[in-house]
Amino acid sequence: MNSAEFPVGEPLALDLVNTRPARGDLLSTPDQLADWLRQQADRMPENPPEHLTAEALRQVQQVRDHISAVLEALLNHRRPPEADLHGLAEAQSAAPAVRHLVWDGAALTATVRRTGTGGTRLAAALAEAAVELLADPAIARLKQCEADDCVLLFIPAHPRRRWCSPQRCGNRVRVARYYDRHHPAKTPETRRVIG
Image (cartoon, rainbow, N blue to C red):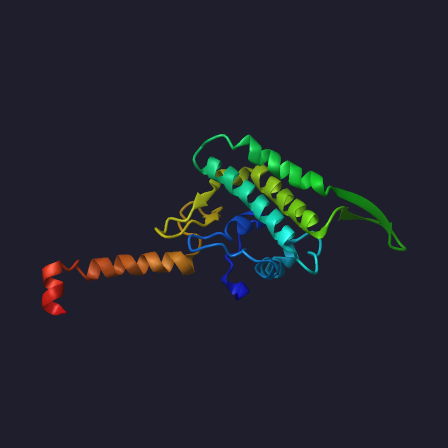
């Protein structure tokens, strides 16, 4: 899979949820997860494990499921499921972030380290990104793409934004509208005569 196929550009937790578009799961193997993590490398608090296991993938998918359930509730103006909020807290607690002071020869610097396996640390970091997103007032602007065959989520910077991507879904919708305006619907009888 080409990493360019991953929808990116939203907060990290939304990019994670958006790895499950309408056409299938983009994180169904450890290799796909590794590709996604390489694309998100500059946004991750620590380097991901060198070798991702099926267990690490399962942990990340579970965090994604919790985030998805909470976001769906928010989109529908419902209270988020307590079990999913608890699941995000559990994922963070499984590999807590501890700030360590390090003397670099001239000053003290703080570095964050997590305990646990690589998959547990990765799931904890993604759950933490979800908590930051869900606690941000910008979450009130959360939208789902208005293209008929798209389920991707985004937080618009402009209130008139309607699609996850102006290039991908926006162009497709505009082209379909243009075609509908300039090519009247053909009746079954017309199609038989023409074809």
